[in-house]
Image (cartoon, rainbow over all chains, first blue to last red; front, side):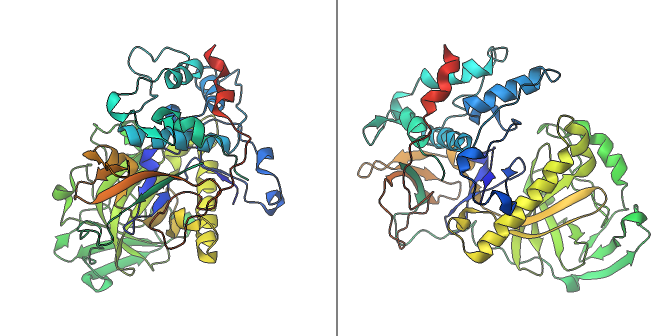
Length: 154
Length: 285
C-alpha cells in the first residue's frame, strides 16, 4: 500500500468504539496505486506539491508549501517522501501528550515569518511546560518527534 | 522505535454510552412517498431525481436550487458563519445551519443514494472544510450511524486553482477504494484504515459514506487528563468519562502479542535508519 497521507494531525486520528486507532481523511493523500509501483522502494516515491496543515508539515514539505503560497508564478515544488508523514505523526503525538493547541503553529505576530525557518526553530526551542517534562525511554518528551522520525517506511 | 497505544488497561471498561450504536430512527417503510423522475436539475447526468414528500412526522420543504447554495461558498470554512450545508440534486434538502445537535434532533434531512439502495437520515453537522461538508447520518439498511462526506465539485474546482481539485477528489476515491479492498483482504495494518461503505456522485457532489468514529485525538486533547503514577501513561478522559491510556510503547524489534490490548502503529517494527529529523532542520541557520 503506497499511500502518502500528507495531512496527519490530531483531528484526523480517530478512535473507534472498539478503541482502535484509525487514520482518516484521505482528501490530500498521494497514492501510488498502480501495480507498476508495487516493487519500487519507498525511498524512490516522492511527492512534489505541498498541501496539508502547516503546523504539522515536515520542513522539506514546508519549503514547497511556502513557495506555493507566496509566489505561485515562480513555484518551487517540494520533494519529499513517506518520511513527511512520520514527521507529522511525531508532532501529533507530541501535541496530544502535551495537550497543546498547536505546538508549532505560527501565532499572531509570527505570521510574517518564513515558516521554513520559523517552525523548525519553534521545534528546537520548544518551551515545554514543566508538567509535561516527562521522560520516555530516557529522553525528554519533546525528543519524541526526532525519535518517531527515525523510521523509514519500507 | 516508538508506538502509540490507545486502549484501556482495565479489562472491564466502563459502559460506553456514546459508543453504543444508536438504533436507526427510521426505516424505508417510514418513507411514505418517494417520487422518482429522470427530469431533475441535471437530466443529462442520467441519475434519478428523488423527491421525498413526507417522512414520518416531518414535513419536507420545497426543493432548493443547489446552484443558489453554491453562491454561498464564500462562507464555507468559517466556523462562525451561518452556512448552508448539505445540498444535493438527488433529494430535497432542507436549509440548515451548523447548530448544535440538540436543535437538529427530530428534523432529519434524507438522502438517497443514486442506486436507491442506501437511505440516510442526515443528523448533525460534523464539520466543513475546503472539500465540502461532513455530516452524521443514520443508515437505515445498515442499522448504524455513519459519516457522510459531501464534496462539492464546483466549489473544489474553483477553490483549488493550482492543482485541479477534482483530480484530488478522484484520487481520494481511489485511495478509499484501495483501503476498502485492503480491509477485505485483511492485509497487515488494514485495521487502521477507515471503512468506506458506499460512494456515489451526481452532477454537483460526490458522496462518501464512511464509518462514524466517536472520537479523534483532538477531542481527547481538550478534556481533562491525568497521569498514571505506576506506568507513567498519560490518561485521557472523554466527555463521556471513558478512560484512555495514552502510552508510548517501545516496539524496537519486539513484536507485541496479538492478544495484547495495545492497538497502535506498526506492531512489528524493524527500525530502519534513513530518516533523521535533524537533517531537515538546516533551514534554522
